Length: 202
Image 1 (tube, rainbow, N blue to C red):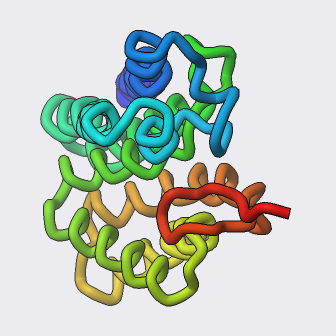
Image 2: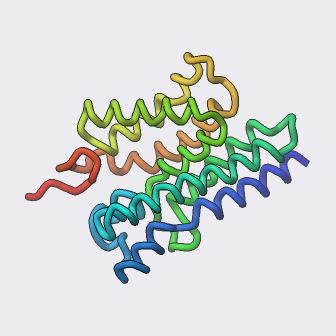
């Protein structure tokens, strides 16, 4: 029975993650596919570049929500004895759906907001810690992709050392693996701006 619940919640998480709000909103407002410009990714920052800050803010909230909802449901309705690991798989699946969405030709975003939504469902403190680490690293190394990759690597150990060893820890482990795979290809991306990931000219 736990395996069946794990499969169902993981599928639901993946389908939620595959809801490509950035693509749909940008296409509705501007009539373009945002993956054909800017960073080439279906992300909040690329939405801002193509459709403005209001559209980007809407995408950010919706991307967080599509990680939050399946995680919250798993944490409340999965079998009690298996709830933590099922919730972790659900979040990892939601992040994978965002990165490789079935509704958009498996060309999606980078998964940060969706993963953050899962952490928010588990523990708001875990969400704030993740945001603080990401912001700090971005400010220090001035490279969004590397900051995101290092954050994904650090979250689980930081949570463990901080005494956060519940679903937030397992979500950081499972979701972190997907994020590391996704962000690894952007390690050498060149950045001109601190968080709007446009490549440097020439």
